[in-house]
Length: 230
Image 1 (spheres, one colour):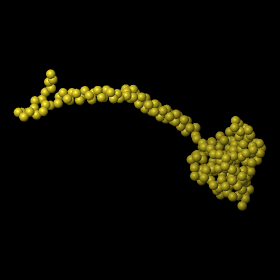
Image 2 (spheres, one colour):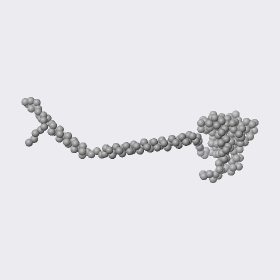
Image 3 (cartoon, one colour):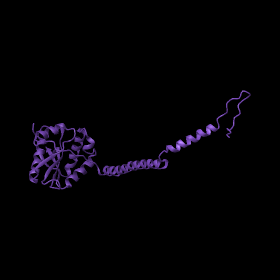
Image 4 (cartoon, helix red, strand yellow):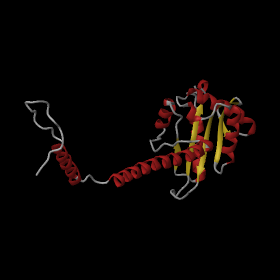
């Protein structure tokens, strides 16, 4: 059964209740860590930042004065790769106790009106990860797959950027050292000269022939010594 819903921009006193709904959405998602933080006080600050961004709005749906859903939206103006404005929905959520009562429809109606007022031709939305109900709801209203996006905190991004180039340099340095060592080994040892090996083998055979013992004598043991030539 549909209920009477009022959709309007969330003001300062509304943000803590919207943050509570954000935390509720996080607990339902299969990718909670990628959705938002669990600290509601930080969520309030982040919602305030979104409101301060040009084109950013936090729309809340109220039933009997209580927030039962929210829509995080931004109007994107023409830029380098776009020739026309677009409406970008970052999050759409309805409290579990208020679903199938027209709350989501009311929120998207407000989004469509905002898009029309802004001259936005397209409305983009990123469904909450793991929320199949929202995905089916959006598909039913004509939303088709377009693209996906990822998010990272500034601190993590800075740490990763600082770490990755150094690891690349270490890997490249190790390869350069290996090549240099192999080059030095070839230079110091040089190619094997088989003629020198043959000369050494011939001299060894000659020395062995000179020192070869004489045959045994019937009268006594053989006398060994160098051969005498005349």
